[in-house]
Amino acid sequence: MSRVLQNPLASIDQLTCSPSKRDHIPEELEDDLRNFGAELIQCAGILLKLPQVAMASAQVLFQRFFFMASFKDFNIVEIGMGALFLAAKVEESAIRMTHLVTVYDHLIRRAQHRSTSPPLDAFSQQNKSGTHQHSHFIPLYYLYIFKRAYEFKAMTIAAEMQLLKQLGFNVQVQLPYSLMINYLRILGLEDHESVPSRAWNYVNDSLRTIVHVAYSPEVTAVTSIWLSCRDEQIKLPIDPGNEWWLLFDVKESDIKTVAEQIKKLYYQPLDRQRLPLTTEQVQDWITPQNKLD
Image (tube, rainbow, N blue to C red; front, top):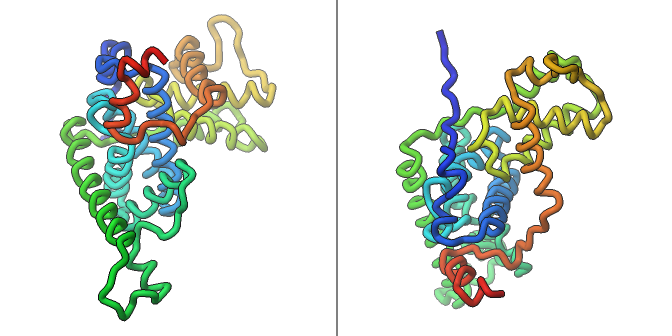
C-alpha cells in the first residue's frame, strides 16, 4: 500500500510572525521578494527547459525556506538558484550549474535594465567571437565575469546546503496539478475550452505566494477551479450544505483566502528594478531613514 506524504505547512506563529517580520522587514517588501524570487525561478526554469513539476517544486521550497530564515540573512538570488538546482535533482531533471548561473545572471540584468552582453559564461563568448582566442591577454571585464560566475556557483552550493539544513532534508513537495485535473473531471469540466487552462495558470501564479506553505494542495486546486469558473461565469452547485467544494473536503473560507492571495498579485505592482537583491540592500531598505520615507 503506497502512501502520499503530506506537505509540511507553516504554523500559525510562523504565518503571523515570520523570521523576516521579526527582523522588521515590512510585510509588503517580504511579499514582493517572495513574488520576485518565485518569478525568477519560473523564468530560469523555462529558459533551462525544465519540466513544470521541477519549477513548481523549487518555488515551494523557496517559499518554505523563508518561513525558517529571514530575508535579512539570505537573498532571493542565492536561495532561488539553490532551490532550482536542488528541485531539478529531486525531480530527476538535473541541470549544469554553469547553465543555471548564466541564466540567472541574464534574468537579473534584464530586471535591472542592464546590458545582457556578454553573458556570464564569458569563455563561450570568447570562443564565439575569437577575439582573444590566440592571446594571453584577458580584458579586465572578462576577469570580472569569471569572478562573478565563480561567486554565483559558490552561492548556489551554499544555498542548497542551507535549504537542506533549514528544511530538515524534507524536500518532498505534493503539487495540486493532478488534483485539479481530477476535480475538473469529476465536475465535468475537463474538456471545457478555457476552464482547465485558466485553472492551470492560477495554480502557476499561486506559487508566487505563501499559499502552498499555508494550505493543502486540495485547497489550491479547488480555488483555481473556483476562480476559473467565476471568470467564465459557470455556475456550480452552491445549495446550503451541498456546496460543490464540500465534495473535496475544502472550506469556503479557505477558498476565499487563497483566492485573495492570488488576486493580489495582479493589483500589486512589482518594481523589479528597485527591489533589493542582496542582504546588504535589504539592510539599507529597513534602516530608520527608509522607514520614515
